[in-house]
Length: 110
Length: 287
Image 1 (cartoon, each protein chain N blue to C red):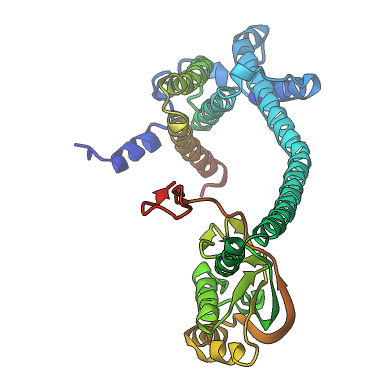
Image 2: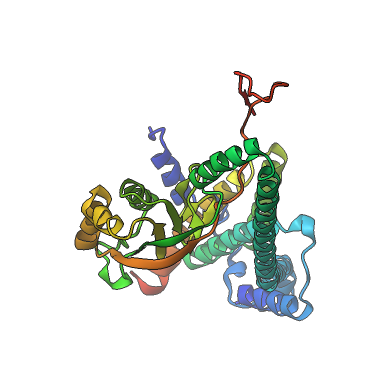
């Protein structure tokens, strides 16, 4: 519930203010968002499993987003181009799928 | 012992999708699982979570709106780019027309000059033969008109559209030469001895300029023999085969009063130094 509340507040604020992302941030933000989404789905699954902990959620959220942005930054600096971002998206994509599948099992028992 | 390959890596990612810390911290914060905090203390505890989620919301909204803005900007730039391409193409065409006109003037002037002397008159005869062979003069006369085109869209087999390839056009043009054509143009592009017919991506290029469908090949030659010799020759057989088996369009008709333009620019690739007697030396210089 509080999750939805926080998201809602953020999205509404974002749409009202329409912040333009500074150019240096543009390659990192989408990846960080994907990583953060993974943390959100992980938290949601833990909540359905009955083991949710806000501390773990906040720590995993922040570290996921930071590490994802860092990896993309590192890839840029090393000159491997989008290869590392692809790796990040693949890993978090798989994790999101796995977590959503677990949530779905909880919701629909299927 | 896990398998040390990529499949086990993916398995690991799937299995560890849930942060292990959730399991370890299980049961320690039962109040965090309530739908809404009930006490003031509960709200305070939830504050960091609320904050990071709000940040995520802002980030999502910002990403989406930035992406939309980028897409809109690209859409807005497109017509301008298309305009510029069309403008440049038009100006290239205009310049090419000017070049052709000036070349014609140079030809007329040099002929007038050459006509003054006996040597010049002999050279003029040579020049005319060479220019005809190099396709550097416009050609006119009767001949044939061959139209080929891709198969219509509804005659596809196995989802592959039957298309005319550069090799088909090469066969066609070579067949026309064999049948005795004196001058050939594809879609008003004259074929000279150095004109290449080849493909780049989906387009067929003649002399490095892309053609648009349908392909109209005009050939000047003896109208009594050209059409029959061409249709009965190897190229005619090839294209008739394409028409019967792949529904390719292939039409041959007599063309009267065809006027073919001169071929594109003739670069100087070979030059001989004149000795003082006016005779060429034996060593040509390749540029």
